[in-house]
Image (cartoon, rainbow, N blue to C red; front, side, top):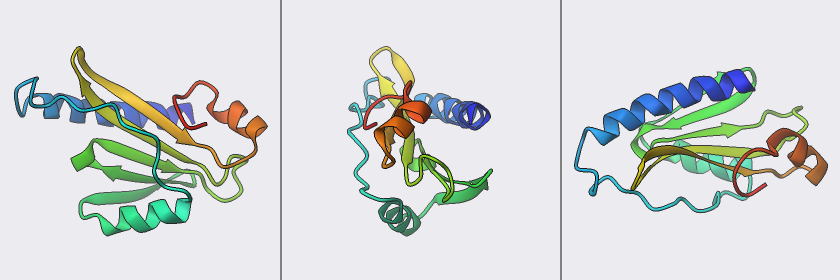
Length: 125
């Protein structure tokens, strides 16, 4: 899992640098993202598949959806994973002090499992 986050973090960092160069710092400021709006993995997949430009791939069983327009990567736990059915959103946010990675988790497993797999992540656990 750490390998997965490192790879996605590197991809999103490159995107952040590209986005920063597109306009002034003031124009590129984004509001702090709220909690994950999807109630289920099925809701997430339905919505993400409806968006043009979102690409999907399998990363060791996890569904990874990249929405470059929104500077966001979605990670959906696979069936059989102890934290299934959980959703992770990693998003680049351009703040007043520069870009940073925002991570939200909607863990729909039991609390003990959520704490075990997502204890050091932000929001929604």
